Image 1 (cartoon, rainbow, N blue to C red):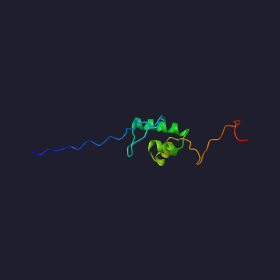
Image 2: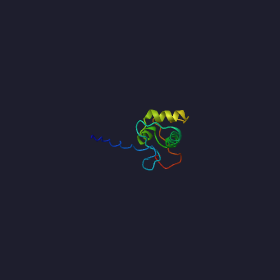
Image 3: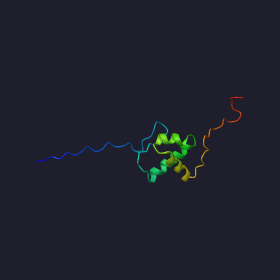
Length: 97
């Protein structure tokens, strides 16, 4: 009469539908590959975020590598900003004379 015990199922990792605080970008669990509709939605979110943020800040929030985010943007023909890019203040704005 031996009884076998089963191990508890592993704790689930956060799903790709979890979002970071208010930014709209999903954190993707390490090693998780996106396909289909999830990949398309993630791509559109990253492209939208790149309009106002750096690749590195997108990487930190999503858990994806710099190369993965950069590749995703290039494949989708997004115009890349030059390294060290800083937006200029609009002309005529109050600032240093």
